[in-house]
Length: 509
Image (cartoon, rainbow, N blue to C red; front, side):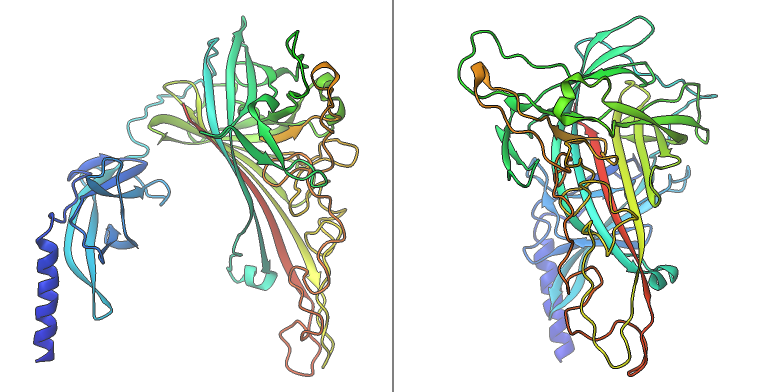
């Protein structure tokens, strides 16, 4: 009897669902060819208030979610990221089944009350013909402007070496994140294919200012459009540097009052393209333009160059669609890094139809190993104090680069110079401050290190973490660290610490 009542209730629930708009996949249509991020549309009103959907692809469950309404307000929308899932292109005549199931809860148990499915043909790499190869070149047309959204993420991870050897993976913990916009304007072109590129930071959309910390001693600062200064680069059609400089700014004649200093600039060069015709699978010697490590921020106006060329290995990884453009996916990896345990890669997508880079991913990973002593038999041991860098007991040999502490990272030193690890996309403030209009007070110069997010002056690495709060340490008086049985001495433990800085430049228009 109970079973009959339960079946009847479930049937009534299903009937209530069916009484609304039909639950069906409206887009993509059956047997459609799709690529990149696919918007799966379901009619509004087809999902009850307590309902949700389960998404299956090729018979495998992907996700259960409550979809949101699309901008038109007529459909529920679910975004299927075929590239993010690492899906291979389907073979002709062998589509993949995309299925959406409608769930409602009954007696605190989810039940499927309806389904809808379509076949899709994944084509992230299709219809891009390079023939025997392609010459990749920038084309500089004066007046052209490219604006990129720049997202920076800094994460930290720590894992026991034995766990790593067993196939474990450390969980990445977010340390900071920041967003900015960067303008690349073509101001001139030269014979031979060279172009003059103006590079400057822009405010986030809809903002009159943003808050940024260059020097923790001075605290957060309000940055407006008037604070931004442009740097200039002359580069070849392959992106190699001819020169780069930061012209001094002079306020308009007749200006009054104190104020505009225009001393915040950004250094983020376009990727260097291969010199010869290339095709997928090719590799070559190339370079990555990195911020000059010895730039004196106190005298940046007179710097002869703002970038240095770091040797790298280039690889044409594949052709694929990115942001609806047929692209060459290139991966550059810096070779012979200046410090052990540092890996730097630059992945970019060069649009074959427009001759522009539509996306750049800069990834810097710094790995260090440390040995933590175990406790003595029957004894407790205090937590491990942090080291001078604030990252592990002693930091990377010699400590992390100046400013590369928690909250600092990749910055300068007390002399106001940019540290050797200054990354692409670093936001800097020039110092000492120049006089304001008509002798008004100037802004103080940048201090040591780089700020969280974009680099400039960050927190100097002091004494590290207090006892009991070191990475992997235990509170004072806590039990000894080790896997030994009671009464036996615990062994030393090797811990792998990792710091990762990732920057993603995405072409806005």
